[in-house]
Amino acid sequence: MNHMTSQFKSTDKVNTFDKIISLGCNCELTWNIRNYFGIECAYPMDWWITPFQALEKLLENRFHDLFNINNLEVSEDLLTVRDKYYNLLYHHDFKKTEDDKIIEDCIEQQIPLLKQKYTMLVERFFKDPENKRVLFIRNRDGNIPHLDPDTTPMDRTGIPLNSCTLSWRNCSLILK
Image (cartoon, helix red, strand yellow):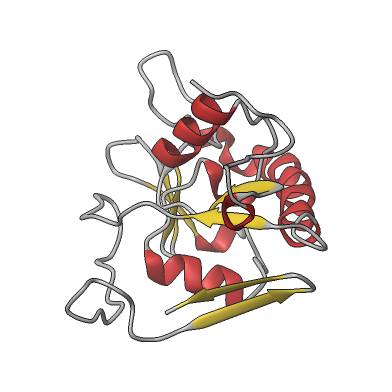
């Protein structure tokens, strides 16, 4: 196992990165990145469940209005909190009971600290790639309980037909 904390190197320059950043779709990817590379630095989508259309909307809106109480609903089985605007799940952000159920009556009290935390993570997400070689990684979407189906049009290879672009000085993220 290769635990590199500041640089992720290969024998050729093409595969050398300063940062590796998860773009979701779920926490499994972040767990694997942290476990394999020994990375501790957090980003907004590390522990969310984000279908592709949610990722696209988050990037287009630059994560505006996260944790808006009017957009949040606790799932009927109390396992997660859904953001109805972005159609994503805040699966690990809210306090739970010992049997892993969301504590419904304290959701609103947790919002200020979550907004503060994610404001910092979003700032890091946009700042860290500046002047660095960054590898953005995203794992597969699937049928995700508690969410509306992802309606992103895909081509025959499973690549989204619409595109979303973010640019930094030395880095571009193009989702097509």
